[in-house]
Length: 195
Image 1 (cartoon, one colour):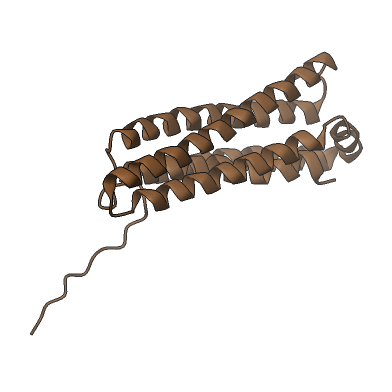
Image 2: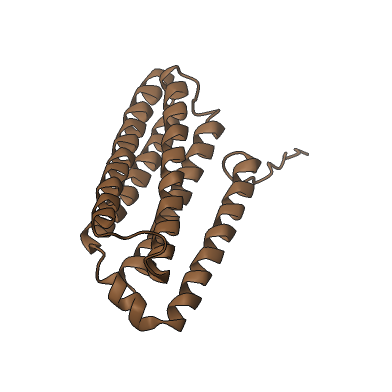
């Protein structure tokens, strides 16, 4: 009689990242609900203020983050190749691409923020712009942290620190980056499109 050892199915990455994900999702959910409630109280103001936003920035940033998340997925696929050196080199290139796109998101967002400042927009302009600034700056900070995480993951990848049998740290970084992407996918239509 042969005995099969059952392997526990664990979620990817470290357990702590899932706590962070749930806390972040809950925090943003509260902000999204606050936005929706405030919008309901003054739909005309929100619609009028929303017209001052350039949807092209939001759409471009959506494409940028979705593509960067795809690059992170490709890095994870690459690190599982049997040839550790080839896997590290390929994964490192995909991560560099993801970081470049994340950096482009940052530059794009800074340009958009600068346009709003030139128009005299600030936290006290009105309720819509208060939420716009809080949500987008909070997300911006998450992208910056995500870039730091991807940088550190890439450094370890370049040194051969991950392989097909041990890539949990890369999974953890990928989960955070996908969180950043997911939050923007909700934030973009909520702030820029839905009327």
